[in-house]
Length: 315
Figure 1 (cartoon, rainbow, N blue to C red):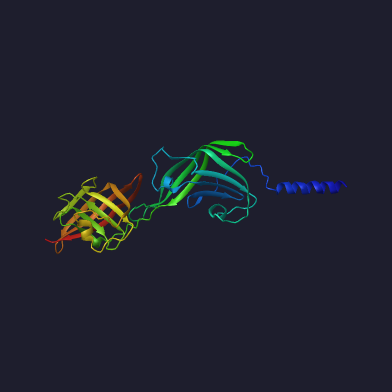
Figure 2 (cartoon, rainbow, N blue to C red):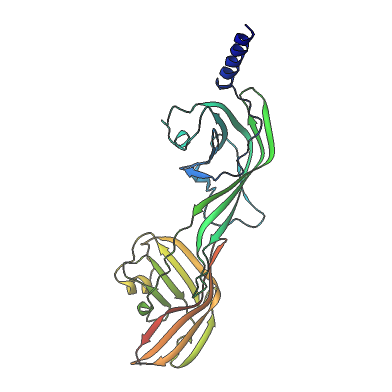
């Protein structure tokens, strides 16, 4: 009889462990990688999920570095949500990202954040320096997320507050900049207002705007610093292809509206070096040295010594 009673109590214990009544006390996703689907950023760990929904209109994860010591701050509101769930089985991304997702596992406990702030600090991650030029491109942006003064409402009616809860890193891919220019395609406007390198039907350009009047000479070597107005070096990546007639595009009297610019980077440091020789005309070999480009708060290093192109002008 005693053995039968022990078996009965054991079966009751097993049933209690499997009926979905869990007692979650803390949340810990420290070693879990964040992923996304649409506007949802989520972390999954066995039977647990921790996810937030931030409308894209808030630009929470813009690919640009935030100011030092000034993270982007987003308040938990009606359209910005943060939830923790515990399931009765191993959870997958389909349970978070698909509206009509799998019916199992079932969420047996859910905490809903009712107030607090999501703080996001964004920094750039770079490629290894090119062995020849030293060039370093931005390959990803790291968004470091911390929840401040987050209050979760639990199913039993109680609240739990975290003064500072580190969600961790969320990575987004940077726009790939080809930075692939043929030195033989270098050209200039007849009024000497621009020197440009671009390919017909290509998607990028590298332009020296407002070059100094004496930048192009007939002999010798000319060196000039890249400036904010004169000798301004601009890289543009376009959403559509450039036209066949590049002269009309770059040298026209009005600024073209198409193709539209996807990203524009302005050189903030560096030097323009021109070696002037004669070869069936005046040959001007232009190199760009120690150039750094900037867009917003982000920057990348173009290289130690890059051949911009060879500009052949008549005698």
